[in-house]
Amino acid sequence: MKELIESIDNPKVKEVRSLHKKKYRRSLGKYFIEGKRIVEEALEHGARIERIFISSEYKGAKEFQNSSLWSMLKDIEISTVSEKVFYSMAKTESPQGIIAVIHKEVRSLEEFLNQMPYNPFIVTLENIQDPGNMGTIIRTAEAAGVDLILITKNSTDPYGDKSLRSSMGAIFMIPIIEVEGMDWVQHLKNRGIKLIATDLSAEKPYEELNYQGGINIIIGNEGHGISKDLLIQADLRTIIPIYGNIESLNASIASGILLYKAREKRECTD
Image 1 (cartoon, rainbow, N blue to C red):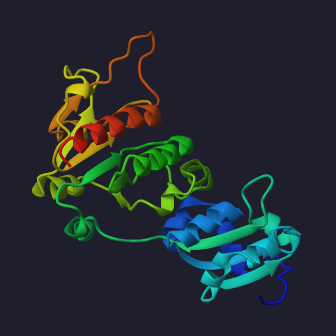
Image 2: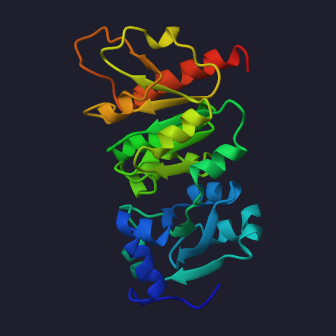
């Protein structure tokens, strides 16, 4: 490792602080993660780590250096920083002493569809605003065997710290493509992929839906649901029945119900 960085004005340190904001994560095409466990998962799943910062006060540094993953860091820049510098970069209240800067994977939807399974299982998150929901849905999608997640531009950033923590490492395991406008809808329809939307006015409950073939399940905004523009594009509309005195389900809970039912039905012939 290089010499100790003690200035909070170091350019590399300042770049990490800029990544606290969504606009810089977008413009730079990078984000950062904190903590030994999530850094290990990033390494295990081949995330494009640019550099790692380790606090001079990090008690787990020696253990990390002696781990089998340390050998995977040979092409990654590693810097030791003072505790003051580390705290200036960290977002968590009690940081664990290790930060990694990661390049986002940037791929077009068309490119990805050319490499997808014949009947892909896709999820679109439209205007999801709560970072906890975002991360939980990503984690649930990976658990349910989803092939791809599409996220509309006006959603909360999946690479923000709260979303990353909620995803519990799933962010490195499942492909994510951010989309805007409506062109992506036609790309899917051209491939014969059905758009499935939840709609409170729908009559067909989710248990009775046909989830076979290529499908794209749309999860809408927490307060307003799926936009009208997208709802009219849906090939199938369905409803999750509510038996109590509430108006709607939490977005992450609704996604879990739908994704696992879809997986169950798809397993019948997959």
